[in-house]
Amino acid sequence: MEDTEPDEPRLGPVLVIGAGLVGASIGCALTAAGIEVHLRDAIPSHAQVAAGLGAGSAEPVVPEQIALVIVAVPPRALAPVVSAALDEFANAVVTDVGSVKGTVLSELSARGLELRRYVGSHPMAGSHLAGPVTARADLFTDRTWVVTPHDTATPGSVATVTELAELCGASVVQMPAAEHDLAVAAVSHLPHAVSALVAAGLTEVDPAHLALAGQGVRDVTRIAGGDPALWDQILSANAPAVAAHLATLAERLEELSRRLSVRQPVTDLLEQGVAGTREIPGKHGRAATAYARIVVEIPDAPGSLARLFTDAGAAGVNVEDISIEHDPVREVGWLQMSIRPELADTFAELMGQKGWRVHLG
Image (cartoon, rainbow, N blue to C red; front, side, top):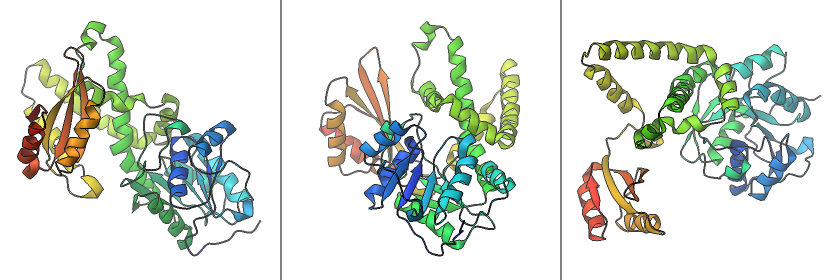
């Protein structure tokens, strides 16, 4: 079968294999950008649902007409599906959007495949939700999308996958597959594992004690709600890198436990944590900013949140981030807004004039 070598980016027509959250969201984003998108899923109804949401067409395709195949299936199926796509779609560049890249590349290489038309990639966006009904076109906007070229990939193939990410609104970062896997072990896979372990401990907590749960425990455990079967595959595929980070974390936990058992100060350990938060890049990859915190009380009544956002928008201040906590006793909500420090006093005053109870944090 002919193995073409695309030298220029060619996006369209595109086939997305796997119509879950990520695959369907890619379809929605590309369709919104004017790209012809086709959908295929092992469960045909998923492709139909995604098509109904504007992610593309679920009708059969002519293989020779497909220019790009995007494989968005569970980790253990990636290599077989990529291999089959390279064979079926001889004129297409093929990428996968799995969260571990080295394992897929190794499995494909072990099959003895010609990989000039294959380039792995990974959009650093997702949700603990799943399925095509949760898809949205803006899922990748301003998020990082890693493209992982390898030695035998053609420049045209790399350019095509890069264009895919850019059309979805993402910021592209290139790095080798092995480096990518080390990076995501630290910033994605380890946090999920730790979140799951903390959440698992809540099953042993007295229900009366859980009634005291606030935003802190919700923040730490939020991502633990991801699909366990999927995350088992992700962690297994990147096991050596994740295990190394877990071993380092275990040493820190042991040190914390040892000090607390003898009532020894732990300030330096906590300060290291603060320092770590400052290392996380800010929006669009810029240096982290120490934003001011403003907390607004929201009455537990219909329309309150919409009115708050309307008033905040009228104040002319860009809100960088938000989080919401509910007070079940007082039946109010607390919306925490992060804004630039020099705007905090003016913003708080304007919101107060509109009748909101505002607290500067």
